[in-house]
Length: 302
Image (cartoon, rainbow, N blue to C red):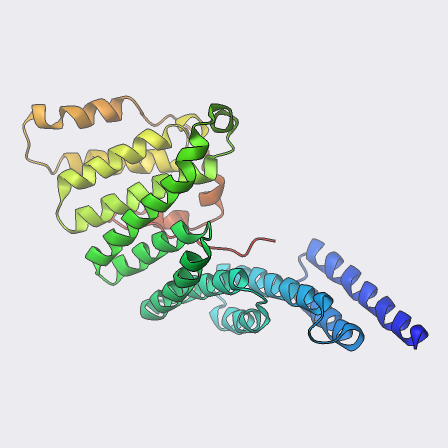
């Protein structure tokens, strides 16, 4: 009996090694086949309710999400949908399930199925709020962007404001640590803060609340100036938005003075650096000025 178990464990080790090599080579098919085999062998050795099987399920969920996102980038939506369905089956906890539903939302939004995207985002958000997940702000921003596309601007604005509150709840205690801010440890939180102000400004603009839109953009500019020394795409986008909205406001020069002062304190600098969060995400959404809200894909982190 021990010899048989040892044989199965050797097969598990081979599958795990194959999965690691396939991932390194970006061999998506090989990665998923090796992961499924590893799960099968673990079930044979350890049983369905074991810690080993639960860990293998978690890895499968991560792998299927990762490959599905890669397929989405190539617009292979049907194949990505099948992989996400498998990831949903394998999700071992609410964190994995929430991330998978966020990726379903990303898929349906890119495939123009906006109501389906909203439904998945709302389901994910319910989990995140219950578990106090750090991804809550991103889901609010994604709901904002998707509802905006459906012309539900009042609801979209509400989610942008809720995202700001969530970001500040995490950000403010940490920003007091000047060293952390200086080292760039908070760049992702800063980027999210800028996106939230951007999306808030967009929704005010859709609702013809131009002064409130300008105030949101100007606030975003203040924070964007601290990202990579102000040399980033978000900073330039927010400044452009603020200047375009300012031109639409029929106020005397004195009424716009405070905004001019804010914008003059955080001018965008020349350069092409972008935040890591946006270089990996949907930068075309935030740079296409129509206006349009930014969508921040929620990936399942390893």
